[in-house]
Length: 318
Image (tube, rainbow, N blue to C red; front, side):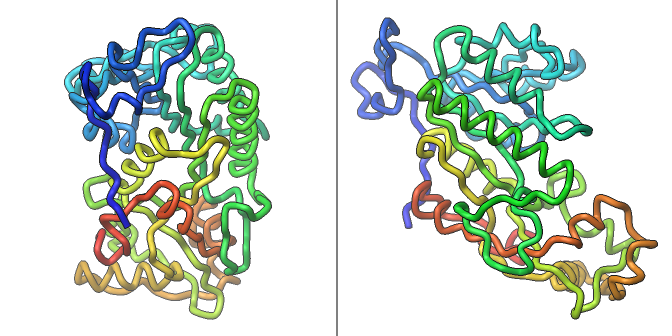
């Protein structure tokens, strides 16, 4: 398994020039610098930017003027705009050769107007070569512990997951209509010790219960650094209109995950409770995760994107 190598900016004689294909009327690739636009430049977007810093021109959409100084300090050009204000997105047209889209849908409704607004804006001028969208593995719904591969029919059980399916459909339509190489990443729980709320430590300190073994569900994870590397691999290697599960090799039930973390941190293991009593003890968001059980298959991630995980299991990543 080869390790993904990040692209090197081509010079006039660079053998890497083929990474940056041309379009009719555009300057030859060897005379242009790749421009990567990050829409939704949070923790994972910043990790992507850190890897690409100095290799490409980095742009990021931001609705907040308070973030402009932070983005500039990281070598990212901030672009003022709001996904909920379609007219503000027109400035994005023709700016980027590759687009990484990590912003979530709105918190209400059954559709995602943000994705529709973004794809419409990208069509106004010269198109990007690639678009990568960060979706969620929640679109599979409850698989009752079965293996979920990318060809499995999505059965979203929550409004949040249905909005993601709507976004995925918009990305697919955009790719088919424009021939832009569009990829969808289905992402499970993201963790990392240097990520805000990125480990189970806080829940363990609170003594938040987990399901007893008989009621427990399978859960899936990806380290934030490996997710950033998967985003980059998809930007340069993703196949057209392709879906990729982005998860590590762990195969754990949720309670076992928290037991493992507790042992690593030297903390008490969380109490185990039956499903019949957990509804009164946990927030709705957490309960929604406990109502779905699936095991994600990451074969396509490794074979097609040729990504070698740095944190193949959660015990390594934690």
